[in-house]
Amino acid sequence: MSAGLSFFEFLGERLPDLLLALREHLTLSLIAVLIGSAISLPLGVLLVYSRIGWLNSAVFFLANLLQTIPSLALLAILIPLMGIGARPAVLALLLYSIMPVLRNTYEGFRSVDPHVLEAARGLGYSAAQRLLRVQLPLAVPYIMSGIRLTTVYVISWATLATLVGAGGLGQLIVSGMGVNQPYLIVAGALGAIALALAADLLLGWLESALGRRFGLRGGAAA
Amino acid sequence: MTMIQIRDVNKRYDDGFHALKNINLEFRQGEMTVLIGPSGCGKSTTMRLVNRLVSPTSGTVEIGGRDIRSIDPVELRRSIGYVIQSVGLFPHMTIGRNVAVVPRLKRWDADKTARRVDELLDMVGLKPDLYRDRYPSELSGGQQQRVGVVRALAADPDIILMDEPFSALDPLSREQLQEDVARLQQELHKTIVFVTHDMDEALKIADRIVLMKDGEVVQSDTPDRMLRRPANDFVRTFIGQKRLEAGGAADVAEREAGPDLGGFVMADGPTVNDVMVTQPAVTYPGRGLAEAITTMERRKVDSLYVVDRQRKLLGSVSIYNVMDSYGDEDKTVADVMMPVRYSVQSGTPLTQAVELLASHRLHNVAVIDEDSRFIGLITRGSVVRHLAEKLPHGDNGEEPGSSTGLGPQGGNREEHS
Ligand SMILES: Nc1ncnc2c1ncn2[C@@H]1O[C@H](COP(=O)(O)OP(=O)(O)OP(=O)(O)O)[C@@H](O)[C@H]1O
Ligand SMILES: [Mg+2]
Picture: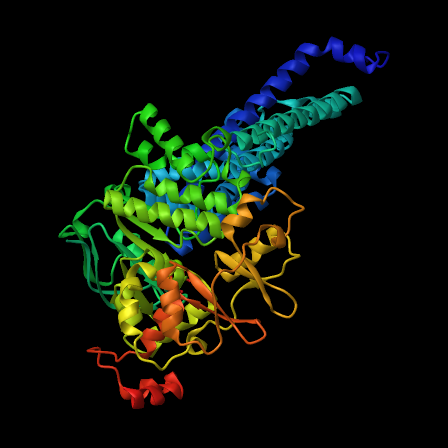
């Protein structure tokens, strides 16, 4: 129907739809990453301190398992349980986001030099102070890179959210396929790519800023 | 007065390793106790009993008469200075913040803390303006170690635990810090427990030395008594071997043993050749000053004799001569060395050498042969060691077999006396 338009004219014409899709996409992804991190960060810390060996293996096994379920199947499972809309989409995405943050948090805390921890203990940091003032800051770079990785993945997976009626950039792609409108497909795909790249850049910058803040990236600045 | 009392302590680690076997020790108020012994003998474990980093499997630890299990471990640790063996600075905090850790935990006000930090950095030769805001990764190993030491002193604790605090330092700053710590202990009556591998360091700073082996205390005594009455062959070899490794190390043990020397060396038997250190640290006139320092560092001495290729004695350099001119890269040992004013000929009776040491207040005296070649060094330490080996061992129940180590002269001397 609009075959006569160029891609940019098309973009101009459909701009409100595009922006809406972008916003939905971003919201879905952000909520998923935030909730996912809110779960996996403390869980990771808990695992560092748990003395129950099998608990660690069980949690990591489960988190790994979640990661392997095909996303389409996961969504299909969630529809009968939660109906359609944003909620099942967010749930599916946050389940995917758990593993990278969990693993990196765990690794980050474990990577803290035991001598540094002994010094903290010996100088009279309480357990909570050790956690918040020594281990957490030293683990921040690991945690941040987990969050960054997860965010990029989630943004790309969120294109499937449209299958449960949650909208987002995937919506453009799917309707583009339905009405045989390649511009729509391209716009959706490019939007998702741009969003992922932007998130990656932003979080990468944040990561190195935090690294500098905590004195972990050499100190040529001094 | 006893400050810290360790009573019947055994420690088995989780893996079943029996690290401490029935340890009984007391650390006295205002004294510096040095724990020494081979690697893995349990020095760190013993020290860590005191701040509850290690809890005994059986037995008790008391501070000021109070069982430390009744003290909150976090409060206990804040009141005890602790220098960890591996330094353990917090990599995400600046040097200033690292030093301020305990004052901040104790909620000192910010001004007082900042003043204290600067004062301490100054004390160990790190200019506060230059170093306060750096991160540990921007400091050398030795500088980090100094920060680790002052971090333990920051909140002015009465008890200080120091686990090999000077192991990464060059001889000059090591000596400087040893003096600072000794002064701290003498002026402010700190109770210090100090772990080291280095017998010279122990002899120099200790009020009391605790020699350990395989999780047991072999001997706990003043440095003087340990030199005079080693409890058994292990102590003897430990002292001897360590002292020999140290080569011509100078002034060790003078503090303790100095006044007694004259009285004991009356026997006419021993000559300087029996007593001298035979591999003294030397350097050559053409060597650069940095090389000289490296040699001193390696041999753990503060002065070197300068010899030519034929081992003829040309002079001596002390660390102070070297440091004075250190900035000048073109200078060599020959430019800074001092003439050797006193030396003794091979075969001279030991008494003469000792008189020379005493009357001129020398740290050591060189022994030369007929061709004025440098063949050995009499140090105060070597004299003391000789005495410790040769003198009757008094009441310590020494078995007769142990005299086999004394060599043939031992028999000769008995005939004379
Ligand atoms: N947490 C632990 N679990 C099991 N064994 C341990 C533990 N800590 C120390 N050990 C063992 O206990 C023994 C004594 O250790 P300790 O650290 O007290 O030795 P050390 O005398 O300080 O040695 P070094 O001079 O090498 O520092 C060693 O054999 C060591 O391997
Ligand atoms: Mg140790």
